[in-house]
Length: 255
Image (cartoon, rainbow, N blue to C red; front, top):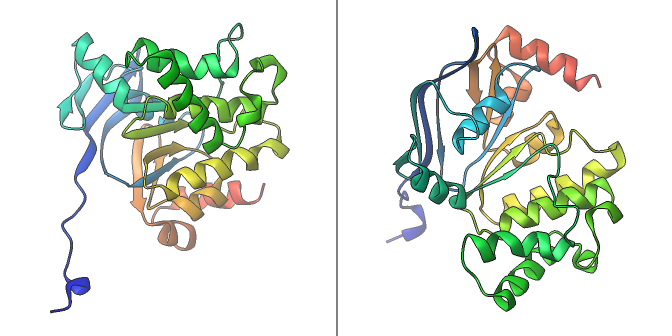
């Protein structure tokens, strides 16, 4: 019997949004958005400014509270339960446009803080973990420096390592290269590519289409608070289904 040819069971759903809406006053940022992310999947979310991309990804770890619909992470529906929310945020790491590092702490101390406070690790274990992930993002030599002594690209790599120190099941990235100078973008994207290669479940909001084409399993295109199309990178970049998607790609690929 040829075992290799047998079909494997599908990966379990780790994130599910069902008809999620979010309002800011009278403005509807998300309009009944539904999507599923499987364990190990790399999903890239793109679209014009104001399309709801960042609001969507922030609803996954409840930095934004959804007004309607359901958000389920790792089998737990997210609501107003604070204890439940803390548990989910341990499972879901997030990297922002801004680095949000503590300026008065060294790089190593920034990485050790979460594991010691939230995961109750001892200082030696947290230090070993922090150094492991600094090696992962290729800046172990920066451990004793302070954020102000680092370049923007290095600071963002520290921010990625800090999230990884919580050993999350999912990593969310909200335009992680948008605040960087052009020459620093590739060093951050290279780290994200390597992370994707480890099998980490990832949701990435980005305009870096080269990265998206290389890494994504699924492309999600948003406009006006709605998901306009969901497809493979091959289909999205060669024959997008919507006129709006075609226009977006034409504009962004010209830059």
